Length: 225
Image (cartoon, rainbow, N blue to C red; front, side):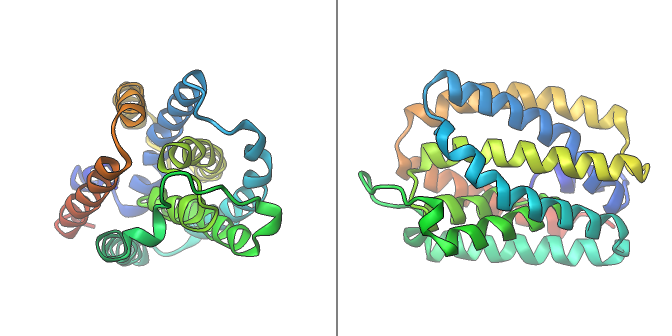
């Protein structure tokens, strides 16, 4: 949600920025997932069931984004970020379960399957802000605590970012040099942030999420197409 407006501010068209951004997101997500696994915060048994609806949606979303007219991407981006900001500010209690709440099995939660499919479609399509949609699905619907939600979120993001990057690369929409520079910074940030996320309280993480989405919405408002 911060890097996509930054790439657009550098003069990239929305479709090129959307595609190039996936390089950094993919590398960051892989680094984060590995760090969560090392700290025993990644629910490995849940990964495959969660990835089935997410991956299916990601393929559909990335194909749509690759062919959609550029002028439609920015309003979709802004609308999604504003919606998630409002949800985090006024309905955060519906997204973040109380400590000790047992997680639901995906096989017993049709709402969880639908939410993950939608997250995959959106993540393949735009990517910006998809973390908050995954939080809504994993914490709000399946009731994982916020740390384990973040761990599973990184795996989902890595998978559908890889799918989207493959689609965009075949369409020659990726600028690899800016993407790789972004990836270096993203990986460094991921390695630091995982250690922080494990140590702080869920309440602190909630406030950080709300602040981040509010700042990124403000940045996106001034991004040029």
